[in-house]
Length: 347
Image (cartoon, rainbow, N blue to C red; front, top):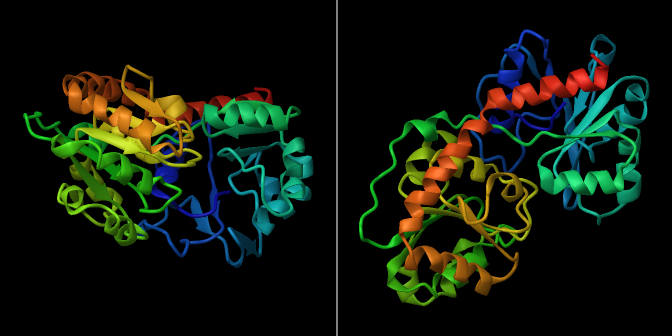
């Protein structure tokens, strides 16, 4: 049971549904969120949107769905929702007598009613953390369940299939893909970028959000070296990734960050903050990328400058990224889920 049909989760669900050991049903709490960046695509026969509505308790959106599916016909249930009333009801009633797994990114330790909201996790059969960033935190806070690590695995074939462009002697092209908001650290990126000089350019892809205000603070000489390509559908992203030399995700916080999976497939070196969950699983420091202290524009500028001064790192570390991508296919993720189900069911 998940919140919304995101293409990245659906890649994994389809791979899992193709395994002979599993008969999979997927239920979504809604068809699309108000700020959903994904175009709607037809559901698979094993997918269903539950009827219901949501209401806001900032910064959360709480879902109420009815009627709920009959869970008695399933051997194990996976919950990818925590704050919804639907999830809370199921975890506190129906799932008290059934094997169930919570699958989630690292949780905030703040917020209204936080202690009450997370209480059902102490009774889960297992917690499947989305990456090592979340795993240690869940182990510390919820020692009772079995602990697993199952990050997002998405289809990287379109990124892997495209040929990398040959680097020339021009400026190093840094790419950011995501919402242009403070949580994603776009302001930090722009501050760091303007320190790099004319041997660097910046390609921005994603929803505009706060970008006009942020760009207005930059000198004209820096703005001239920035290209904003706007929001692009998932199908269009590979061609933008392949225009870049280095991928940057400077988030102040990101529970995971699927764009790092895509950067691996595109064969890009990665620079990310130490508060990006995917960085702990996908970025090996000095092998296929670099990390910097979150919320520290000077630290970010230092890491970006390394590629400007030593552009030979781009091809070497990019090749290491593409090599790592082989382990992050939906088929690999499906195998992890098979092993998780077997462990929880004692098979």
